Length: 124
Image (tube, rainbow, N blue to C red; front, side, top):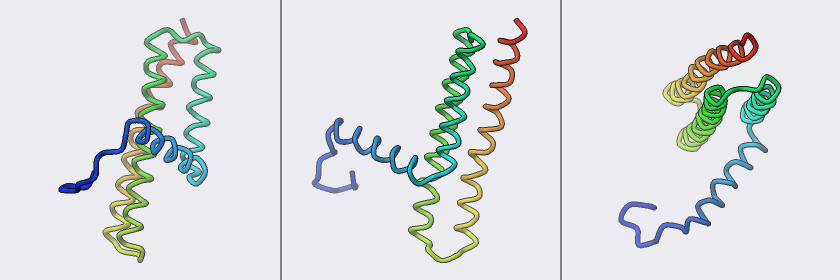
């Protein structure tokens, strides 16, 4: 809601619809989202194959969700920056690079956690 606006917030159902629309848009337009969804699905399938324990599932599901959420946030940041600064600007590039770096850092930590989870599942 816009501050000092007289309009009410959209209903929960309508807000949920906006979120679904955003997910569909991201899947249709963003290659990295599709890659990350594929990797999350591969991790889930691998989890069934190696019969992860509850803790392993928590790590895999939370890690996958956090990476996907971070990539969606990064995409929205890049979209807003492109809207605000359609021409090339060093600060716009800096904002986009830092947002992408945040996703990359998270991916590195989640990958390490995943390796530990799957190594434990395979060894024990």
